[in-house]
Image (cartoon, rainbow, N blue to C red; front, top):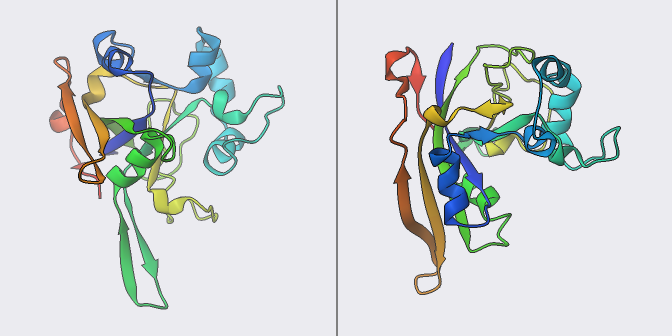
Length: 207
């Protein structure tokens, strides 16, 4: 197993909603749980499938069998970890930073002037294990996930159902500064109940 640091960019109604993810101990939950309000262990087993993972990664806004856009009912949570893309023709590697992707999603693809970016950690397995709820999927890894998908450069790791609040280290609010013409930090909110993954082995950082 590997402990992976991740970033999660979120577009939220305001500062109170951003802090509540930590203060209310709710953690970061998937859209399916948010939509259903209440879920059961048996229903979780039914949701964690290869088909649903493929929909989440490759067809996020497609319509599911119930007539809903899949992104509204996905049991998975996308996280940004960064990745390296190889250009064989140019004989060079391009680094895609996790923060850039997190900010892109946190600003609702550039439509908002603010973004909330959470730093958290998850446990990864060295190979796919979709039906194991507590282990995240490293879909950015071409050795494990060899099927082509157009968003590989986002450096995505996919968590399942929930990221517990004690695995969230902090939330940083980023805001567009019109004077300097770039996004900068507005404030940082630390989680007093954060549990460091340092007691585990094989911890690695984002790209």
